[in-house]
Length: 88
Image 1 (tube, rainbow, N blue to C red):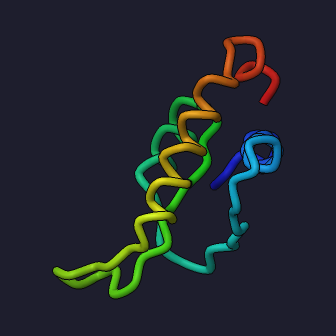
Image 2: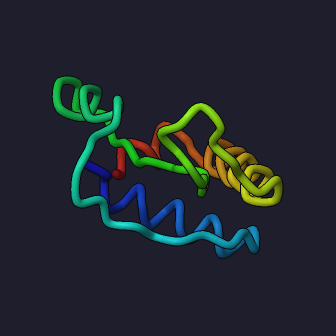
């Protein structure tokens, strides 16, 4: 589902901002972004916060993981331009 060029951009952005990250390959499931990619052709990536007990009513996350994820999303957004997106 993820656009490889967009993924690479996100990884480079994380390294530049010194934000730790892990690349994961999903073997199942899906994300809402797949509808946008499939029908509109818009490049998407999935950014997830590491969480324990994800599909329960008491999911737990380390605050630093949450803060790093927010910082990464902010860095990605500020690094995007219409030209960059068109290049994906």
